[in-house]
Amino acid sequence: MNEVFLFLKRWGLVVSMLTGASAYLLLASIDALEGARPLANDVVQVAQPTLLFLMLLLTFLKVKPSDLHLRRWQMGGLALQGSFWVLGALALACIPMSYTWRLGMEGFLLCMICPTATAAAVITGKLGGNQGSLTMYIILANLMASLLIPAMIPLIYQNSDITFWATFAKIVLKIFPLLFLPFVCAILMRRLTPVLARMLTSIPNAAFYLWMIALSMAIAVSVKNMHHSLNAGHGFLPQVAIAGGSLLACLIQFTSGRWMGKHLGKCTEDEVISATQGLGQKNTIFSIWCGYSFMDPLSSIAGGFYSIWHNVYNSYQLAKRQQSK
Image 1: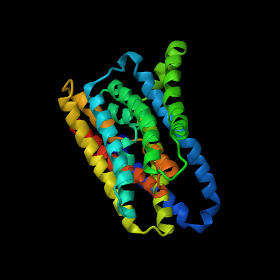
Image 2: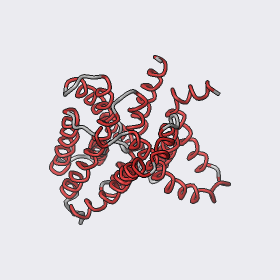
Image 3: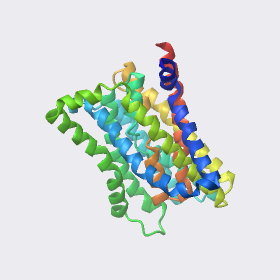
Image 4: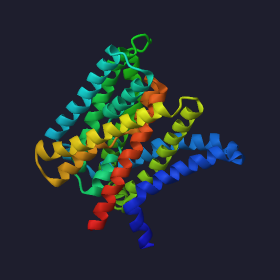
């Protein structure tokens, strides 16, 4: 049993990705399971936000408001993400591009402006990072995304009826309940039910195992979107462009995050880890929804590709850390 838990600590993210992809492919390919597909979709729609809420609640129970400090690397990360998004949006609005190149650019920009994943605090804690600094960046990145995405979307799609306030309202309703409700609940639990709060935080690796389940669902949804885009006749070339754009965004942000953690502010290992995860790990569920809601729907699969890239890298980091122990 101990060997199973050790294996999951090292390669749990890879197991989750393979499980999610396999589950969808089996459900989609076996005709006898056709009746179960709507039920599976309903379960994912309810379970995903529930799991994310629980993960954030467990994280916020460990992170007090006094732990949320501003860091120089956070400002650098916001500047990097915001500048790429604004300049990229101007390029899409002003420079003629082929459909394939435009899709690749949209996928790249979605992955750059997408806020930090709520699960980043879980992985940061496992790697030995500063969860307080990371949580602060999650809040800041979500605030920036809620402002800059509505500001640029009408410029990118000038012929559409999309407005700043309509886009802003949709994003706020998507982001803030799931981000701030667990924060408020954690504060109330620490004050009103401290025994329950201590009991929940004492469960070993609870948030990590919840993330494994949520990740398998996220990958299943990503594979579903990729599969549907192929069936719709879009072909491989647009998907290759989107995959390349998401991979480039992943490399830029993980590399930049590590550099900022080392050179902007305190050069401590926990801050380096927090900066790397803060910039590199993304809320890919949000990017899929954002692409489908406001941009070319095919660009939404960039979030699925990015989820693969950053979780493969995090799996390597977790395995390396566990081996060093």
